[in-house]
Image (cartoon, rainbow, N blue to C red; front, side):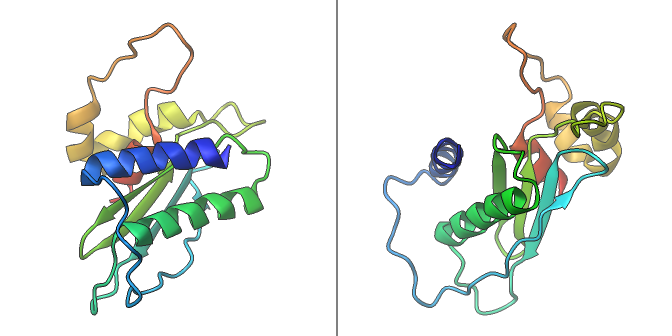
Length: 157
């Protein structure tokens, strides 16, 4: 599953960065601290942040890749049953990397639904994000998530 998740992550990052091929790693790049995935409000949703160091700024999209991959690995070390977890990493230059997974329901605790919780909390905690996504609707009959890992990463801003 990591391969599929990584392909999706790389595809999204390349689209956002409009890259054609990854540049060579920067040997001077700061090595970020290991992300610490935290379950979000009793759900099977994971969030995390890493603050960007003030100086020197040697982060690039390889840094984001390393952080996202480590975040994914740490989630599976903590909760190996979550093999289908997809993570998103959002790098805001000068601030840090914000991480999130798809809002899910915690198995065995169907009272707290990650999708509903996101919908209830986003207007208050992420009003700008919510103003952009509140009218999102599913365009398929398949059972799928309305809110995605990228939404959760942006929610963490």
